[in-house]
Image (cartoon, rainbow, N blue to C red; front, side):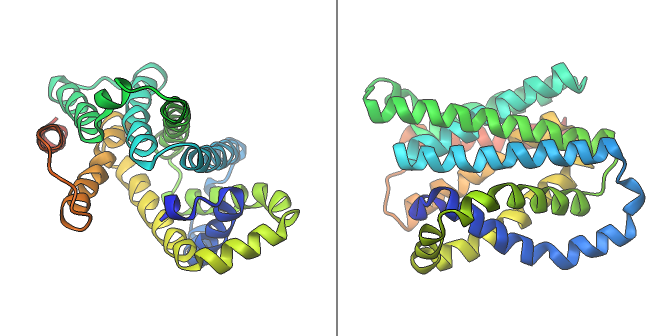
Length: 267
């Protein structure tokens, strides 16, 4: 849906407003229940996460405008957990065991196989080079906010709903001045992509809230790769709805991702 809209900052700001409306009652309730958690360090984590999340959304939209979804999205989803795992080991002191390492490796390889990344590298073009650049930058952004959020949830002990809600408020506020300076584009985005904006505005906070709750139960170095099983849904959608072929590399990548998730569950 984000690719279809490809609306840049106006789209990001509008779905952020929708997310904020959806999350408001849950955020208020969490704030009343856990206000004592909000010390200076907690606010620093919220501010850092909001800033990186805003950068991530804008970089991803830029990638969608400059290159193909089939390159930018898989590259971002493949490099994001790889960078996040390295950061969790170096900065948060996590040490995956052998099944954990094998599961991480299998999932990252599966993402790259499903995306046809090797074939892409074999046929460079300006559009592909742009996709490689923006996809990699998106992956770095994913890793950065994953590490910040993992630190906030696991080490500072912040409640996921309250933490997410405050970060959502702040990053939407950060984008508001620029959005208001370009109201014609905002109105055009709403008129053209209202359904996509509402859908992304609902699904985005739901999905990431689940990730934050998962961080309370398992190491970040396991959560970051496991969330990329969304790629499996992409393969099924492509095969059944878009009539795309199930190539040998996609089947192998799917098997690698399923095996990787099983290994992470056993780790």
